[in-house]
Image (tube, rainbow, N blue to C red; front, side, top):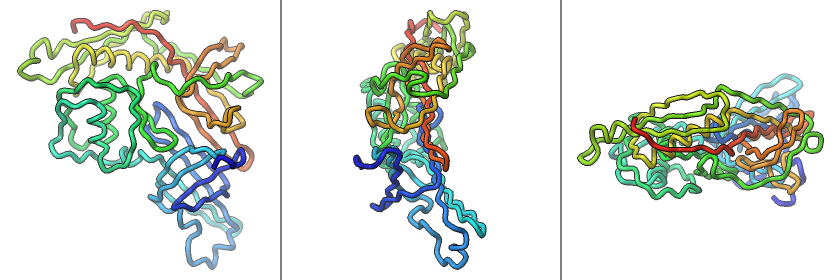
Length: 354
């Protein structure tokens, strides 16, 4: 795939490569969705279908598995979710909706022998929940601390249960271009430093949204432990933590009550910091529209990559991380939309008596 021309789209299904598409979109996000999503549009002259006995593009059936390559680089591992055809005398159009490899863990409920996991690390619990789904996990957080008791709520999806495990230990996850599940701590892990992005040189269309309301000078979180012979009473009920962001001028405070958790002081601090980072990152959103799918080095624009963004008119001159990326092909243009946020906040984190 390395020799594919810039601007090329290749979708591989069952070892066969398809290259001609009328329109295409692919979006992935670190926060808005666990998996990528998008659509593929193919078209033929309508009159050709009047006497057709079989549907075209039969490889693109619902639940077909494929891989997407943009500019010759892996962009997504996908499942076809739906197939919609529309015809007229002049045109026959086929629209395919797809999601990433992790789509099935979003849709599927947990099937577990006992309904709980005891004395397991977060990665051990997540791998147990993923059994049967063929999802590889890239563990950047490497947390060895064990969760004493993790209770699976009846009817919860695999994704929802995994999200609870991650949140309890202060990390998140997203799906990468190969369909792997990447565990990361917001504000600590990223995909390295990318090229500078400067107005007038790398982009000409942009928007900047700066908000006060999501940011808080103090984020307080209160937690419970699972009661046992060693942990009970106030010890189990009064675990609390505080994350302070001294850079917030409006001295707003918020208290977050967590549920279905088994916390101690160490995990409470991680949970408080996660909540603070996620809220503060919403305070600045920079949206850029670029004419290429790849950077100057030939790599696709990537979630989590850090770029130094320069927009003097909006007083932006700082490192930001890619929070969302959307690749698009229409009959008129090829472009990438990226949303970048600031995750470089410094918090003072501590526990206190709840």
